[in-house]
Image (cartoon, rainbow, N blue to C red; front, side):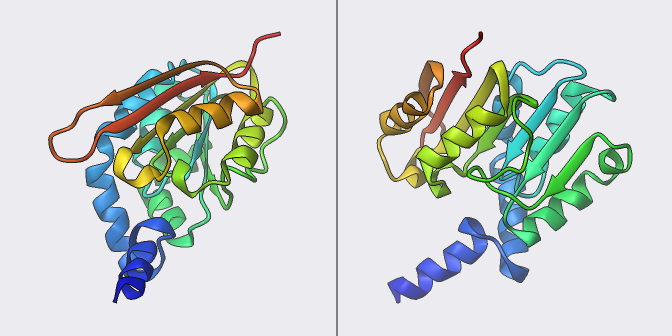
Length: 200
């Protein structure tokens, strides 16, 4: 029974797919909006910047980031789930048509972005799915010197102490870590982490 439940939850939230994945995406769009707003706000986005969103799910954060960087900016979303990419594409159809948003297959460990091409990277509720050392090295590679990495995740799904995530990021080369836990009434604490690629 436990194995069946684990497979179902994975299809809904972990690696969303099919009809149940779309249900999970709808739940994420509602349940994660507060964290998506926090992440975009704390990424300190400016007009014309380029932003990578890792695991954008149904696209709430993509739309918010696109609004923040304006008509001359670019937001790239990479997600391994075809279901989530389809939902994000529907949500961001106008921005995609205008060339302001791109959505493609990918993950933290393999973004297919060019070296030093991004001003900021945002991850909401997916760091627990990464191979963290590999993912952090990849995100360091794609960030410009001084670029920002913003991570937020539900504490109850993280699976490791929050400080372990900080340690993995610092080991990969990130600096200036700022770790906070934010209490929430309707869910477990939000783990919030801000980091930077070192400036030259």
